[in-house]
Image (cartoon, rainbow, N blue to C red; front, side, top):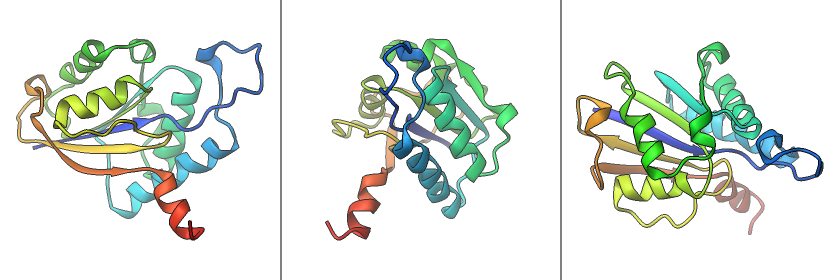
Length: 170
């Protein structure tokens, strides 16, 4: 059994127009939402064997904030440039290259491809994973190279606004 957590990076800042898209950091909301979602994972006793992230600044920051909440060592986060500009085939290639001893894999990436991947793997219509959103998928496979279209089961789809709207009454 394998478990995959597809995580969209937290909300990024557009305040400095001189920065390239790759170098945009998180804004205040992103800096709050990523640890909030990390705490939700920690509260559910979810631990990652491997945390892989896009190397874009906003994704790296998201991965580090989540890792801190679940006690995943920052030095063990693996960064891939190819996730930053990937299409579905590239993202699937990254997943399929994961070593079979990894049972629980988290991947921090970008939309639209992170949503497309979640839909492709589960067959569920998700439409959009919001910033800091997490889609958890399980697979009845021995190795990651076996993942296939609609071969995964959607375990949950969670994101900060689900909780903020409830707590604020709207």
